[in-house]
Length: 238
Ligand SMILES: *[C@@H]1O[C@H](CO)[C@@H](O)[C@H](O)[C@H]1NC(C)=O
Ligand SMILES: [Cu+2]
Image (cartoon, rainbow, N blue to C red; front, top):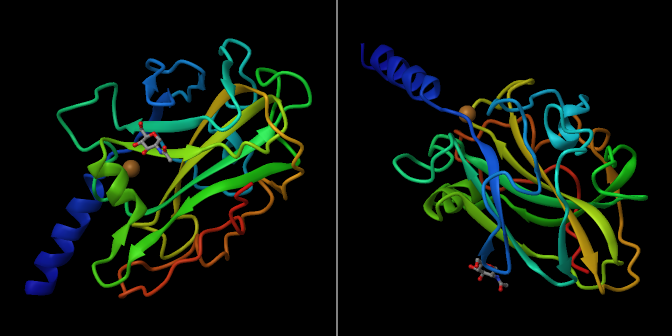
């Protein structure tokens, strides 16, 4: 009886998990406005197939022909801000039921960011945050939620000048016990980095590098998980 009630409650909780999209970027603490410089997907559903080209920059994300490109100096602090719907208040930013990892990648465009499809071995991971506290089971997503949907990264100043895609990713793991299950929320911004350096950072392909069998993709997070390994390898810090 108790178990039956619990599973009904659990199912209701999972059903209530709404989805979300990347809606704003901030440039050194300055809000750039809703959907500006972003490739906006048609809805807030997650990507669940890690072999799909939707893994690159979400659905309809292979070009940004109608998207402006934000000019920023090397070393800029970029803040990403996510919401369930087109509102900043009145609900959890990303819904507390979405437990999981937050990562940021960059890819240098051969020419313009707007015309870059992000395919091939072009992505460098510059930020990753996962299970922050095993005892309290605090996840990176909990921090994003309590921070109004925001997380930040300073772009390494050794990145060469040029146009880039910035790819932010939230991997929600609440139904990741089997594959497909993990939910990939992805947002791509177009930027032009000025100044910069001459680094040649390590790169992976997205899709390509993530496998359904990765321990960071197919994982039961409700079994007193002690550590978490996010997919995509190590962070390059410049
Ligand atoms: C980046 O910007 C955010 C938002 O303004 C701020 O909270 C954070 O401390 C900044 N990070 C660094 C390293 O300056
Ligand atoms: Cu959701």
